[in-house]
Length: 84
Image (cartoon, rainbow, N blue to C red; front, side):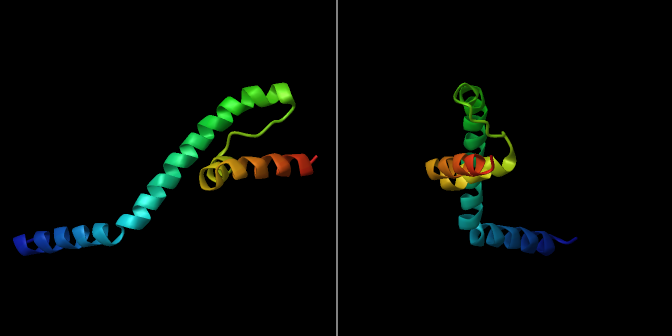
């Protein structure tokens, strides 16, 4: 490839990153919050056993906690209670 093609490809990549900055930032925040939700589920797994509540540590539960926060935890607990 010639020099101008590399410059065009680099410019196109820079333009794509600028245009996708907000959606990529939102996905990054969701990934971070979901990771923290997974950590919370892992800690809650030990404490929940004492209370008789068992929530699985999986990606779906982590995404619910990451997207909804504390209301997501209440939703998961109600879904587990309704499933009994």
